[in-house]
Image 1 (spheres, one colour):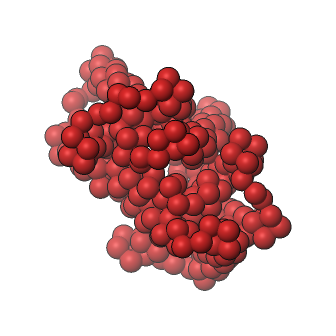
Image 2 (tube, one colour; image 1 turned 30 degrees about the vertical axis):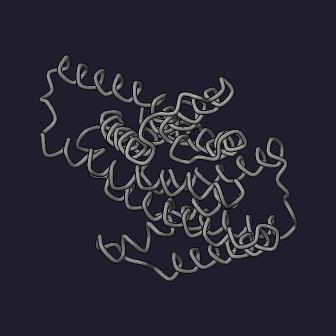
Length: 302
């Protein structure tokens, strides 16, 4: 039974990482028609929110059916705040960053969140930072620097801004992961995901409403299809998959499986967006993935 649970956890984490990697592709294709991050984010969450609310209601019903108590109000409020502080902020920064940098650089920079998780955990959560972890982080950020310099040569002054934004998104997501772990154990992965991402969705609507004065319906069916893909294929399904996988195998193993994500994004970016992939990009990508993979492998051995 335990082996089956672990195998299921790996498969869920792998599927989630693969689906998450399609997000930047959907967004980049949509920006060809309307380069408006808040509009795309609002439509993404319009398609996502019904799933989060429905699955959350089902989780509460299943808990009551099995004779379990309602979740404590304090836990629910904390889950909503984690979604607001971590996931929502990460989304806004990430969508804005994709205006300025390639999908490949975005995914690699966002992929460094396990390294930020190490540093933030050591500074504020009492975790220990070992020499091996520091080396892994240094290798990853060296690789990111190579990709950054290669893109800067072609992309110009917008690349530093975009990279800074997506690194901010990576930090926000690392905080989200650190704060989520205890809440997932208390609420369960399904209910926590529903609460956290519902809070992020509602905040997205409020933000867009204040910034634009209302939802712009003047978009094409093609744009709506891309927004639906971003909301369902690249958000709803992988969110539940990754959190369910993390509940079974832990955050370290989940992070190791996520090394698939940038590789899938790079393949799709070259195939569908026509982005270049040079030898320097390949070297930098190998360092980023290798650094994160080495760190995750060390934790998994422990």
